[in-house]
Image (cartoon, rainbow, N blue to C red; front, side, top):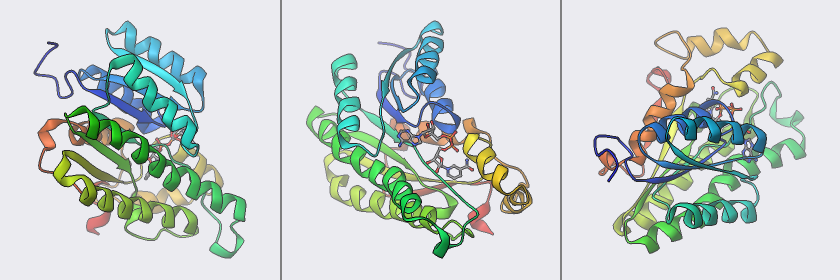
Amino acid sequence: MGDERLLLNGKVAMITGASSGIGAAAARLFAAEGAAVVLVARRKERLDLLVEEIRADGGRAVAVRGDVASSDDVERAVATAVETFGTLDAAFNNAGYATAGTPLHEIDDEVYERTLDVNLRGVWNCLRHQVPVMLGSGAGGSVVNTSSVAGLRATGASAAYVAAKHAVIGLTRAAALDYGRRGVRVNALVVGSTRTEMMEEVLGVDPDLEEVFLAHSVQRRMSGPDEVAQAAAWLCSDRSSFVTGAAMAVDGGATAL
Ligand SMILES: NC(=O)c1ccc[n+]([C@@H]2O[C@H](COP(=O)([O-])OP(=O)(O)OC[C@H]3O[C@@H](n4cnc5c(N)ncnc54)[C@H](O)[C@@H]3O)[C@@H](O)[C@H]2O)c1
């Protein structure tokens, strides 16, 4: 059934933060590689356009408005995957929220809480609702959580984000241990500087950061969203069958420096 040469032929994949940037690139790529995609973000109008585009290209997609910080919203998205496409095989937990340019003692409690809620609790909520479906299906599954170079290294004036992205790697490793023998793989992506709306916002606050980010890459450039999505697609596919608990860098060499 389908085209077996495609990387994600016949899989059902949920992607959070799919309304822009890396998530939107992943939505297009996963669908082109044969997956039915469940797209989750808060901006439903954007998701609806993306779903239309994917369907026009012959793909299968459904949009769910949802905030990953809400367990109920994530539960609804997972239920939509099962109701619409029958199961859930893969998940790219990619929604994120970043602020920069503020030293630790000046970060508002509200910003701290929102940063932890979206980046960490969001992944937590996703794992807790996605994994039971994968365990119950008998087919196992693959989960990919978006961390960052900031998940392995500190970047200046963004302590809450650094803490949350470090925690995403810890959570990924813990989940990989819990489910390794039960057919569910869990990996993290260590994403380097990527040209997306989030990056534009950060550079809007402090344009001098562009030079800093370029210096972080041995290739002296930023990634495009599709370059990150390619790694997520491979990790979600059966071709990465012996990879679990990994923090895989897609960072232009930033963590080699
Ligand atoms: N752009 C970079 O340089 C960079 C570097 C390292 C890591 N990352 C990570 O990559 C991921 C994707 O970011 P991006 O660069 O594509 O930025 P982006 O702003 O284009 O995309 C982020 C997406 O997450 C969604 N989102 C934010 N809060 C949400 C919430 N509470 N619930 C559901 N969706 C929510 C946004 O609507 C958007 O679709 C994030 O986790 C980010 O931390 C980005």
